[in-house]
Image (cartoon, rainbow, N blue to C red; front, side, top):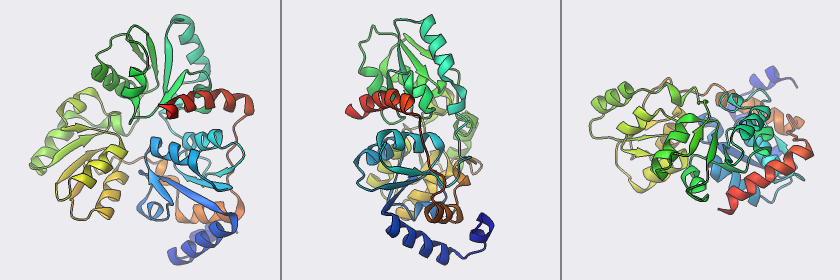
Length: 311
């Protein structure tokens, strides 16, 4: 069957095919918070990058289907080299990850030979391989603090998350890479102002990938996992989220008594939305698309990832 054949099937039939193929393969489906609501509902585990990385390490299954973008699937493969890792759409990349290459990191290391390289998970396996340690938005501050205060740091590739880590740790010896997430970097202080006008009693929570002026106007700065936990522990509270709309969809689905609104309805990651039920069914039934990382790259990248997980 071709993709268009799957696309003609009803959701019920696709769900039946997905469940049947899962049982046959012994597969587990990992889903990021930014996925479509229909994809979130088929998850064996749903979470942010850190939570998914931890889960990928713990999984006792021969096949992992990763509903996210390529760097996430790569990380699952690096952690589980003996498992089959599939991604439903091989074109689901991350523009933020494309802001840095391994060659550019090596050149930066030559410029700052005594500095450590902390790399955000939103990066390629090759970039992770030339880094000292990986971080996520949930643990970036903790990772920075794992180094002595007098140790210089090159923070790759998100400049806004870097600003957040610098502010939270009160360190100036951090060089921020000039990259950004096109979804989060488009939020403005006016977006916060308008959200507060529309929902005056709401708690405004923004992702640390948002620009500094947006972070400064928020009530809370948190990863998507942190946003979820806030909603879980503040039931009934009105919340506005400065992140991709999939996060608000998840919270509204799981906590209908906690009205949650996206700061902007146009905050959509088109790469995350490439994954559909039709593509998931095809991936499981036809082993598409298997993710592989060259061993020489994977071994070095795994060291940086394991250092993060050990924290």
